[in-house]
Image 1 (cartoon, rainbow, N blue to C red):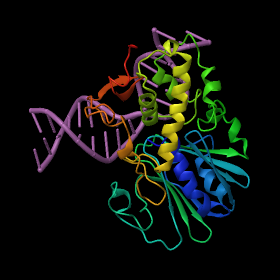
Image 2: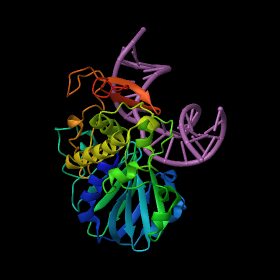
Image 3: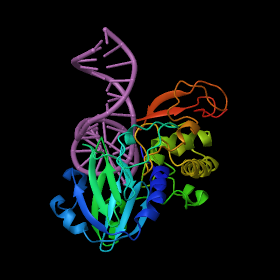
Length: 296
DNA sequence: AATTCGCCCTGTCGGC
DNA sequence: TGCCGACAGGGCGAAT
């Protein structure tokens, strides 16, 4: 699922080709993907506006236009692809596997392609999402910052100060620590993959209760969040099913993960078989030796 | 107030 | 081979 590193990778890839381009036409092929604005009015609203900036907040990608902001959440299986002018349609586009075929053209429009923006010069931006957990919002001006869906987001993990943020962790909370990491009001952009990775990196069991954490553990965990997110960005995101970069190729972080998706396999640090369980209604993988529930 | 639960949705996979 | 249930899970609203 696209988390902060995946969305940031997409943002960086789209920045150059999109900024300054004018929307020639917009096609919303699945109206229910759009929230808070009449779907029928979207094409007229977007047509003619220039794309001024591509920004990210947590897991949200925001296309700032002349008058409005188009806010996109990729949900679990959302893909944003950009096709350069004159790029041929590539039928293999979405069949890519890590390390295999390299798409060279445009994603074919299929039944999962929900938004299609044609740009001046001939470029195309497409939003595809098989499971339709994604969302599109049209927000007037740059007030997306205050939109109900984005206004309550916690700090950006990459710019927060771990020691300071650690002070904000409730001392009496009975939640498992993994639930805290997944809480977008605590930190914006951490999802299931990087929560597990951060907990491993910090040597903390995902079921540890928040109130049981020592100050040093809190700070170490928040440092670990930054480390694993930076690593995710460095390798252009984690592809294990649907996530793709805008050119259709895969990120290469999956093969570098320490725990996520590796239940039953040996820990890369100590060789112990990694356990898989459920925490906060999410599949969770951890090393029982490197992340003990009780301190020795 | 804090926390958990149920639901949305569809491609993929294991079992028989 | 084909059918079918289980599974994946972010975020929201309801329930506890």
